[in-house]
Length: 436
Image: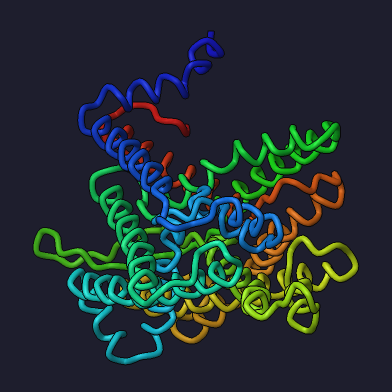
């Protein structure tokens, strides 16, 4: 009887979500804006040789990796070819500059108005970053004959189209955040990644008779996603006691309460992998501007050295650097987050303390030690996930699928976050959600 009651739980939660007018409106707005995004991703820039563009993507695996995150928009060279990544870059830069620059740090401490000012600065910084990235892509495409080298006006118009596409997608993401469900920017990235996955799987089936290898590849991906879910939700609970005074009936009473601080094993999220992959592919992208197909030289060697598709043993250099950078940036970004949160100071101001640990420096040292220990698990997890495409390719010998570990983490993270937000909406209305 119980199995019969729990069997349709997921479907019943979906029905409950769609039966609530406000929640249904939010879900439909999110889906509708994603449809708009996919339409924009198919609006091409004029004057592009699609045949030459397809040949360029076959030769350059780095472009194929970047195309995965744009949902095929870069392969078609649409106005949304750069996606929202200039905005992501601007956000990361601002996140690192706020603790360093006193003026920005003062603005960030002004509450909601300070948050809005930082957000506005981030938006303004997105424009020159998008223009710089668009110009770099245009120079590469012109050198490869994909886009005809023209006068100043056509070049400016193409760059302006790319920048406008990025800003438009950022605007769509903010509309989703305000009127839809989930974090809009993350959902835009999620939509681009998911849109390209059926084509990747189809390429695997059409590439040959290695169906056993493809099946093993899919199993590895599913197991990796399961591990991502486990580490995304894993956390260490630090017990906290609160002592407070309550004035009641003309007398002062002391009361105590207990709670906990949930320290996530992977508190850095996907940011370390974004840092790591940005640095590890940067030399290859720069070298691609200087490669001469007729005369292979140092630039060609650098491009192969920093290429994820380079075979062993030379390919081990790329993945080894990627692994070490992922571990290093996980510790770096976790420490940045820990310093920004100022957990020891927050506990002291709220009258809280960790049992057996003196407030102040002892609490700070204790929390730092715990975070350092659990960050090792998070760092090795992220570095292991980063190596998953390489290991899966070597184990299964499936070469045609360009799957990104960063893409998997984004997909899983967005799905979990969106489910939690829908769950919260249902719980507020006393419905059972997806998670019990």
